[in-house]
Image 1 (cartoon, rainbow, N blue to C red):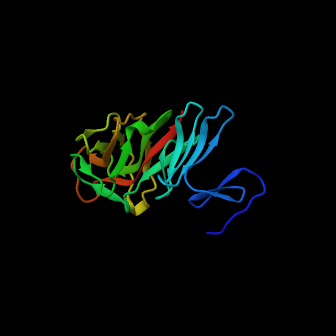
Image 2 (tube, rainbow, N blue to C red):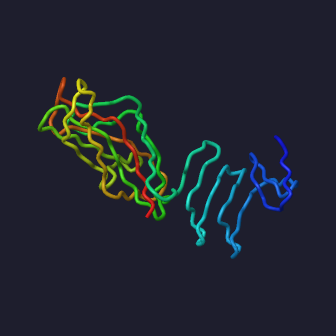
Image 3 (tube, rainbow, N blue to C red):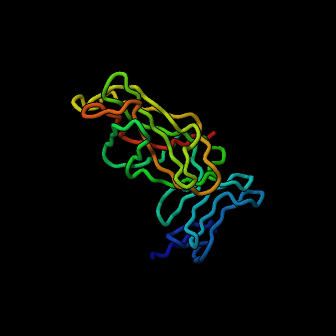
Length: 208
């Protein structure tokens, strides 16, 4: 690792180490405000990069080992995409799992944050209704208020240009780390050329 020498006494982060001037510091790095409260912290042992408000609550936190935001979000809308890969569809009129949409959420992580469920989808025939929801695998039940629907009609021949982006009301995730997956169905059992389509899903985080 290249050594960085600074002429001031301010602390800087470099890799998993920090420096005060030319003095290497091993371990946790903190920035405190005028009231001696921690507002920024990097812990190389835990692999956490965190920012706090003046009450000590986490504003946002990054897991530096995997490069993912794990708690809190900056102002404005941010999305966690539930990545299912290629387009999927169902002709079932009962709830059907959407492949590769398993994810984990800690319900205690959303301080001052609204969370909504968003899907891009459609049906192929007029008179059909596509439904999507979040299923709580851990507790074996649907997440309250997560069910959303669309009657938008589109087709592969036209490139699915009329698929609709739909969004739920605010969601409340139960306390603790739990496993979830996405599900979909159609109001009437279909067949060839008569299905519910799913293109992408996301959780939208909106700072209050």
